[in-house]
Image (cartoon, rainbow, N blue to C red; front, side):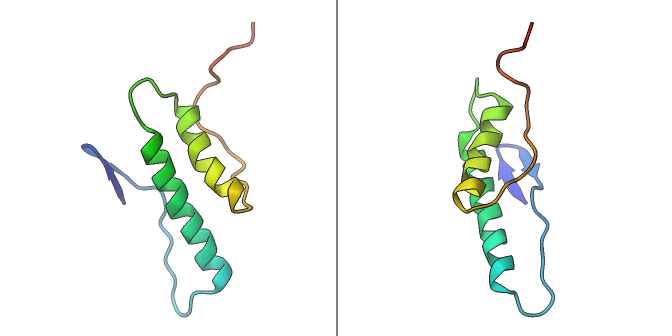
Length: 78
């Protein structure tokens, strides 16, 4: 659970029973880092898609794809 101002945000709920494999640990570390990047990107005027992009940049740098995005495009097609 992450806290941002008065909001509590439940992003990831992963736990392990038994020994944690290296690949599972790497995924969890990426999720934590991506969450921190997203929270750091939040400020007045920032679009939701830009907050998501901050998290996705972390996943991409670590070799993962999320397959989703948040927020509306900043420019709508006519």
